[in-house]
Length: 196
Image (spheres, rainbow, N blue to C red):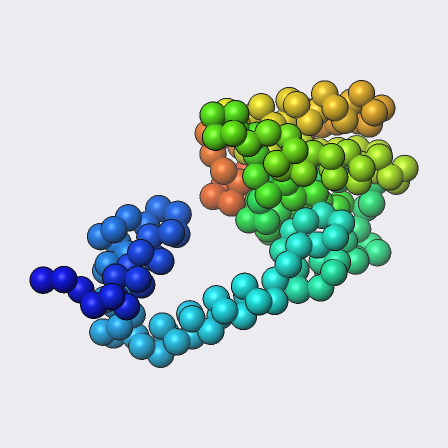
């Protein structure tokens, strides 16, 4: 039996989410349509609003509804320290730890030569410009401890050091191969405190 085209479209759309395969997408679609049509409407409206309203902060590239995000606009943040993260989810993880009170630069990715993603694709030039503004004194490389994250940290670290900036890296308290958004807050706080 073939499903209706609109149901097929919903299943295919749900499969675009990370970690969601065909069977999980199908279960979600059937659940929303059979048991939670109100939830489906809320999800649809929230996605539409987010896509229409959310953009990138002019300074740090994280998601925001305005030109500048609340963190960059906060005058109480330490503008001399800049944490470089791969994604807005990683930034949110550092924020939840409560251990970092500086500013951020969100790469929106990481270097991955096998996927054809280089330094230009992740905003390295914009990072160099932001870090060289005369205010930033320390750049904390808070990329994930994956092969790509390590390569990204190495390449960016060399470029930043050549500009005379102090460059530190999160300590190895964060398990190798992990992604910040899934690491417990105590480990993140310890890694920030013991950065090198």
